[in-house]
Amino acid sequence: ENSTIGSPTNSVEGAIISIEVAQHASSGPYTLAWNAVFEFVGDETPTQTATDAKTDIYAFRYNGSKFLEVGRNTNLTLS
Image (cartoon, rainbow, N blue to C red; front, side, top):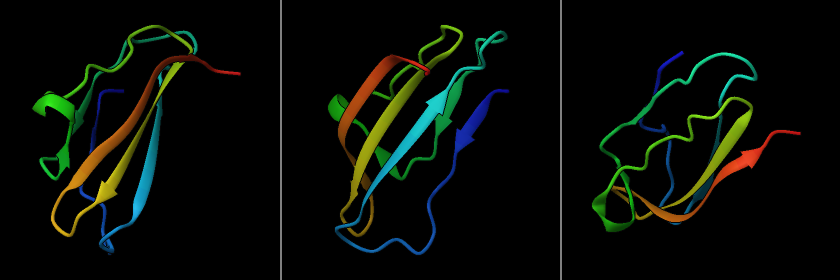
C-alpha cells in the first residue's frame, strides 16, 4: 500500500537510524511519502523504487531537530 514514514519518537541527538522499504513481490508499485522531520540531500525527497521485489534503504542522523540523510541504497534485490 502507499505509505508515509512518520516522525520517530523518543529521538536522541546523534542517533543513527536506518529505514528499509520494500516493494511487494508481485503487486504495486506503491508510493512513499516522508514526514517533514526528514531532510534529504539536495533538499529533494527521493522517489521510491517502483519495481516489484526491490528494496530501498535510507540512513539518517538526528541533529536534535531533524533527521539528516547520511546514506541511501536503492533498487536492491530482495533475497
